[in-house]
Amino acid sequence: MHQLSADPAPQACAVAQPLIEARGLIKEYVRHNGVTRVVDDVSFTVQPGETLGLVGESGCGKTTVARILLRLIEPTAGEVLFEGAPVPPASSHQMRSLRRRMQIVFQDPYAALNPRMTVQQILAEPFTIHREPPAEGLTSRLADLLLSVGLDASVLPRYPHQFSGGQRQRINIARALALRPRFLVLDEPVSSLDVSVGAQIVNLLRHLQRTLGLTYLFISHSMPLVRYLCDRIAVMQCGRLVEIGECIQVCESPRSPYTRQLIAATPKLPDPSIR
Image (cartoon, rainbow, N blue to C red):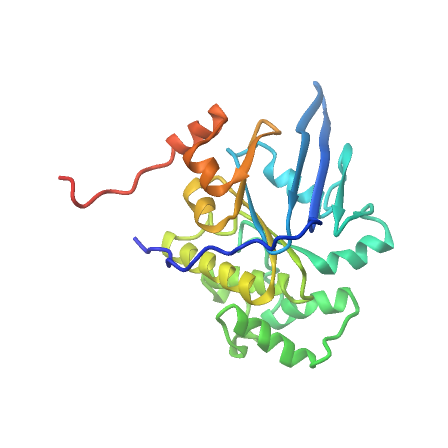
């Protein structure tokens, strides 16, 4: 099994003002049989340079919270602050400008890329949408983006089907970095990849965070992965936040019974010293 490298964990910057703050987020959907609340009074902060892990079983509301932060969906109640200012509704002109600073890397590297577009068209699209041509020239910027994720400019004319899953996820990451955002939501970015390829992507994300000063919200159901990558962990169950704290504290001395269940359910790696 491929081992994650043992370089030191990223350190969060000690600053007073959070980069992202969620206050009392609620999201409800009207169903044929009534109202379903999928996010229930969720509040947390993410400091600049920090990686906050958001964990919980499938369907607990993790991705919904992330989409609310980015205003991909509107909350039923509550608010989100970015750099101390309220995040405006998705339809506002201010939100269009803010999207340059808040990006997402989706879970499925196969579905996230348009199969009819070349890599060059995919990476150039953010600049076209935001009408923000790079100062260094588009071709140079695209080459730099690919280099930053371990690819080179020779892949620009190729189409997504010509790449492996890990290479596609690198392209997704490059696209998210195109406009130099400060905050990235990583929505289970390695769950559909092989273990060894996923480990390479995780180490790439750590390297990018150090070199670019990025802030991450890392969504996962894997406690070992979150423990490796994150500074703090927030645990969700049935739409509610049941525990949040420093990574070591949550993993080694969990307060919530649900957190203890998550940790207990984690498969143990085989010990070669035991027959």
